Image (tube, rainbow, N blue to C red; front, side):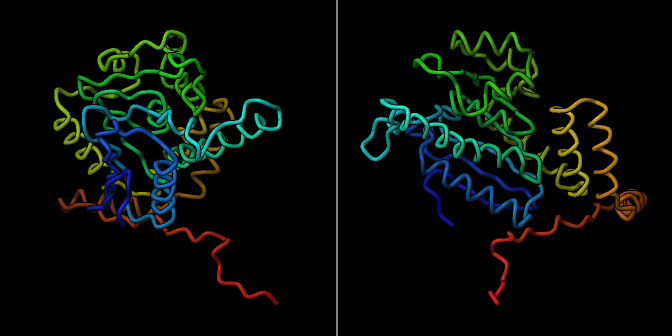
Length: 284
């Protein structure tokens, strides 16, 4: 399938989604959100991949939201009266859902970031699992520089990834967080000299992840996210229930035998999901 904002393919159980509008600095607009949501829904339901790499083209990863979206005749936010402002929240919730899909994906998501990751780009990468950066990368909560508060997840997710004081600094000043400092505070795992080296590292990491049992990877992601938002006691209780559901002795045996035989492991993919509303049901 051809997309306007992305190149997308799956190879060797690794999905690669690349922003492909460098002339517009890969800005986000309704088509971006619509296509991203559709791709994530496909990945979630079909389980044809075991890991997703997000990368981009051109000088910048993304310049964030295309501001003309909110000033064009086709779409505008009515802030002149309460009835119009009430709808702003509903519009935001619709946009939140797209990045929520990314965070809830049944596979790890690796973001490979070059150049500017600005505004909505920060919202997006905060919803990924692992972030790699080239040395020219920088992160900016741009919204404050244009007179607004960031509203698509940065202020909710970023404080759980880096020290809160750094978030305050970025949110209040609109300063750039360079790649080296982003790694120092824990936002990115590693910084690379070039975009090519970064993408090679992302592919190597994705290859390692894809060789592991998908159900155990999914369980790990669930446990990490739950522990982030709950007490240790509650997270341990959730872990006991989670492990009861995903435990599979055959995976342990396969890992042991494969190592003994010096071969690659072979684990079952996650089962495809069929939406309940798509069920073939005849009214009676």
